[in-house]
Length: 255
Ligand SMILES: C[S@@+](CC[C@H](N)C(=O)[O-])C[C@H]1O[C@@H](n2cnc3c(N)ncnc32)[C@H](O)[C@@H]1O
Image (cartoon, rainbow, N blue to C red; front, side, top):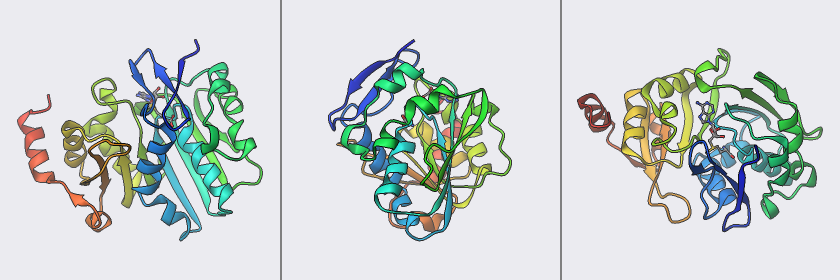
């Protein structure tokens, strides 16, 4: 079944999920919000200039927007950093929907722009290693399945893009167990970012051992969340009170 497509205010398209009763992205600008939340606030753009290789773990591949934006950034800026991009997706879109998605000027390279139908056409349940671009040092490890079934013992992500639907409709991806698992799939210096600012989600993160900070949200949203297991990584942000959130979680304020 094809999903309904919407053009967001920055010209890039997003989808509406009937299953989750929610848009995949912010209707005020799909590409703009992705770049702000996952690339700028996480420090990823800076890191790409200072390292030879890095690993990214994304929760929810969705329309592949984050992956394509990153590939396009590498190409445009001649960046040779080796990027391993892991992403998890339980409900991949069909090839027809993929071919109707258009991120417009936000993706400048024609090969990258047109790569989505090929990615979705070849997916098999479990892990799919895809190298869609011959001249780019980025590989996609796309797990077709549920986050709970994702077992990759040897991943140590430097950046986590937590890009699930909101906690009200996608509860299982915002639990303490989820954030404990993400801690195991990463290391002390990992930066986790999400557009979400819900107290219940933040309480789950802090109970799982993540330090937290908040910053201005994208496109008029008041706040988003930045997390790390190393407090010093959050020094440029306004910190949140983890002890208070843990206390509220234990009291059952978010049950
Ligand atoms: C907000 S969308 C992701 C947007 C995406 N990052 C993009 O750039 O287009 C959330 C995605 O998470 C997927 N999802 C929801 N629950 C899941 C689960 N338990 N395991 C794996 N994927 C899940 C949904 O199917 C959806 O594609």
